Amino acid sequence: MSSAHSTAKSALLADLPFFIYGTTRLGDDRIPFDERVRMARVAMDAGIWFHTSHTYGNALEVLHIAFDRDRAKVPKLIVKLLANTKAELRVVLRQNLEPLGLDSLELGQLCLGGELADDFARGGNCYQELSRLRQEGLVRRFVLEIFPWTSGVALAALRGGYLEGIVDGCILYLNPLQRFASNELWELLRKHNEPVVALRTVAGGNVHRLRDVPGAAWKEYLQKRAVEVAPIFERSGIPTWTEFCLRFARSFPDVRATVGATSRPAYFREFLAAQDNRQPLPAGIVEEIVKLHYRWSDETDMRAEHWSM
Image (cartoon, rainbow, N blue to C red):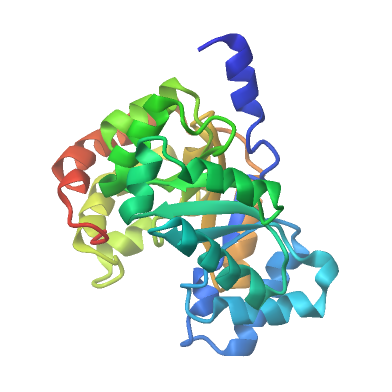
């Protein structure tokens, strides 16, 4: 890669705050509605970006109410755009913009399936549609969502150079317990200095809770991984799992931001405090976790049923 090309890559997504607030918990109807609105307001007051989707329960309703109380503090948004066709892409864009009272979106997370994914992988005319959406001002930029079972699509598109000038980077689960890209794709992302947004900062909760509390881990594989990672965390001497995970994300130069969710202001403030520490993890610790990622990808991730993880 030429130095000019590398410099151009480094400018992509460079304006993102390192911590982005994930709004999944704002759609949880087990939490009183007013509490969720208050949480949204706390995050708005922090002046950071939000990550959201119309698929997160009634999170958009919560956000709309919070936004209406102070439109001057409406955050920039990353929004999931799930679509199997070009037509669906426009529909889902409106499904997210209109409930929030917004005319445009800062960053669209392309969650592609069906014929749209196939077209994307081969450099088809979907790129013209993405360019039109940008030109129309409906979406300023795009990132491509990656899962183990969609890694082939991203791999083909990256190898073909199709993302250049249209899609600014990739977004995937990346934390000490998860790296949701195939080993081959991950190596290509690193080689090309592809900008990355890391999802699920703390992997669903404190590593000791995931390891020790029955049912705390969403899936059994996470509990097993927590068993392996907890000793690494303990040896690090880092006081909190949140700080450990933020510093893990900092350990990859191309990671622009990490997205973490919470419904509790105290935990949110913990995220904010941890993001101020710009030190990556010690290289030896990162190497241990990366080796686990490679093994887990081969043993579990790439063999998993779609959407089972």
